[in-house]
Length: 209
Image (cartoon, rainbow, N blue to C red):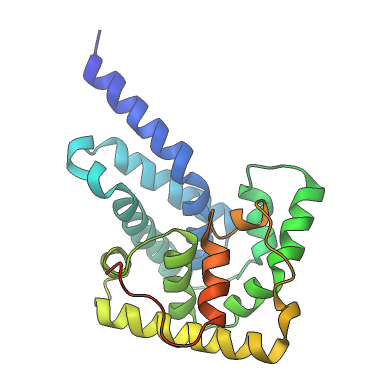
């Protein structure tokens, strides 16, 4: 019995179960094409199969998002085209809850925040999503994007200021409610953290650098 092979298979399977959906959303943000995003994520996990768990497990999320980003950028350059998808298109394809009613509720609840996010410059949107959607630290985002920690902080700070201003101009109805299902679009606590950060005075918290 190949114990090592079995452990490797279980490790990769667990990584797929945990990270496939957020990686597809991230790749689709870059490629603008859902099917290409799926191919990118598949390639990412194929590469993971060739890695030893002991070498990457301590920073698995960072490794996966870095490989996924590089592969997605390669695909984007080869295609030389962008077909941005709406958050609804992406979420409806990767959501673990297939109920149309539940998906409609999620989109309605967070739709305005997602619309504001999509209006940010692409580099700002990317780092904000990595921070609030995927729970990454400034250091992890820096390694994924090849930006310095200072640049990551500047982009997030600028994005939050823009979101704060737009939310204040839009009034309290910008984000009508935050139930547990809605939070899944930006992670278990991501959307509430993003909203509270965008409505507070001062700079975003950088204690996790």
